[in-house]
Amino acid sequence: MRMYDIIEKKRDGNELSYEEISFFINGYCRNEIPDYQAAALLMAIFLRGMNERETAQLTEAMANSGDKVDLSPISGIKVDKHSTGGVGDKTTLILAPIVAACGVPVAKMSGRGLGHTGGTIDKLESIPGFRTGLTRDEFIGNVKEIGLAIAGQTGNLVPADKKLYALRDVTATVNNISLIASSIMSKKIASGADAIVLDVKTGSGAFMKTLEDSIALAEAMVKIGSSLGKKTVAVITDMDVPLGNAVGNSLEVMEAIDTLKGIGPEDLQTVSFALAAKMLKLAGMGSEQYCSDRIREVISNGSALKKFTEMIERQGGDPRVVNDHSLFDRACFSYEFISPQDGFIQSIQTDQLGVAAMVLGTGRETKDSGIDFSAGIVLSKKTGCRVAKGDLLATLYTNREEKIKEAVRILHHSFKFVETAPQSRPLILAYIDKDTINLS
Ligand code: URA
Image (cartoon, rainbow, N blue to C red; front, side):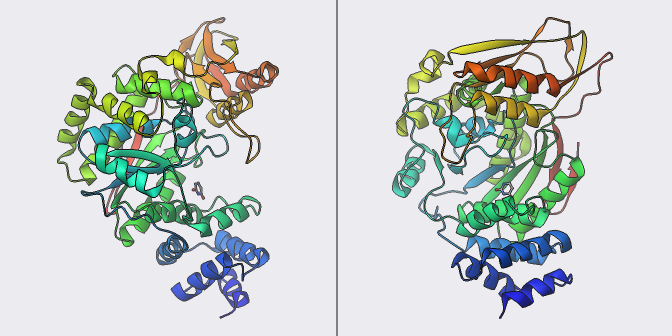
């Protein structure tokens, strides 16, 4: 088999066989296929597309390219959740302890921030002492003992994606549904769960800006999961506005703790509880209504918060942060961003708000640079709110005073005002499983 022929076949719009797809993935991982040929095939896939079978087989070949996590020592149905990424998206910190408190084990591997979006691992590391680099035995052992562990990806999980993602990033081939879906799903498949809930974000702060594209991505991922034997459902959720009020690592952990106490922002609570209910349902816990009732119960009786506290303790963190937010690092500087006019907030360019938070220190400037856990933005007003000139819109936090000016400039461009109240849109826009799409 020759890579040249595979490129030519896809360039001319033909289907690739499983053998051809595997030849490409295996050869590329072994460095037998050079970047220029891999890039040519990626561009051919980008332009010509892949059908359902090809996309599932690409995912399978990628998932098989490295280690796989074996969760079989943990009894019960293990359900994973994946978000396609957003601004202020801290749902994992809320739903993982909720699901565990309901008696369903959560063995969750999470990632770091990517572009303008934050990552669960960075957020958890803002808790003093918290370790996300667990050994395999610690990870499995914690789930067996307390029902919950969240760790960074270890070992050689899906090396094909690491190489391909880096290549896509520099060859303008990121934004293709088959390539995104196989990239995400190969990591989920290799992570070992029995069932998967996908939170596909849509809107200005998301990877997929339109509902149509988000549904197409969700459908592709649900089909991949189902064809590879994993029960998979997707929820399309709004990311046209940040989720909750806090954006930034320790700020988001504090907001997640509040939500576990039942005093978090309503939008964050709605989305987190809806995703948790889907996870419980996939785990076989009962009807959606029963699962929702259980979620409210573990919030009101404090057992979800207790589970989160136990996880912090087990992973070396200081559990006192749950009741004493002053134990988190505090930013040296803060700045009040004020409304320049009267009116209603029509929209917030949410990816730009994520960029402003990064400028303040929430994200990495280079692959290896550190992040400022205390940096970020807390919104006082969001899309749809009526504001008067001089009202506080957001508070900025940073340890780099010189960065405030740039962040404020970005925020000024991100907020759009109108004279009459804009139409609101639902937080949950659609539910998708292998047979149906239910629009809200
Ligand atoms: N996230 C991923 O893991 N892969 C993509 O291709 C896009 C988003």
